Image (cartoon, rainbow, N blue to C red; front, side, top):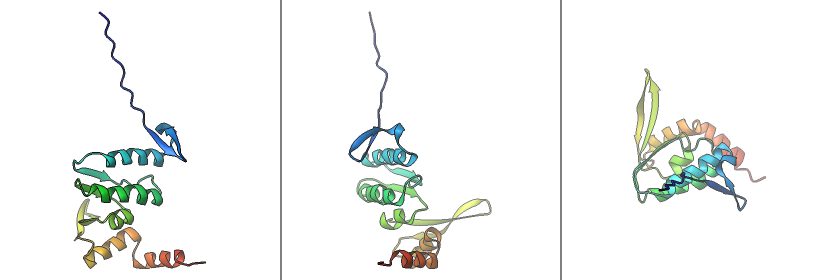
Length: 145
């Protein structure tokens, strides 16, 4: 009697410029994006994401994470830990906990919906560097010349 058991073979590829490449040939950001896209594409179970924006540029954060978060919210509960304002604001967070660290532990500084002014101010302070930093970036980038 002869028994043969094939080895499992999972191959993950990502597409760049219309061509498929093995995931191990990608940058850290490309590998992260491919796996994150897979996780967000399937399932309806609750999902916890801890800083999904790590290793991704802001363009990918918006195109991949923010859009997938908005789609996923319709079918599953998401808990996202992030330092990126695009994820919170453009991902349309339902509930935001602004965390602080003190006396050796984390605690909630502010909690609520983005519609609440105090929550928006804390998001701007923590994630954008404050209103002045945000305004300076806006003025610098908002020029039409």
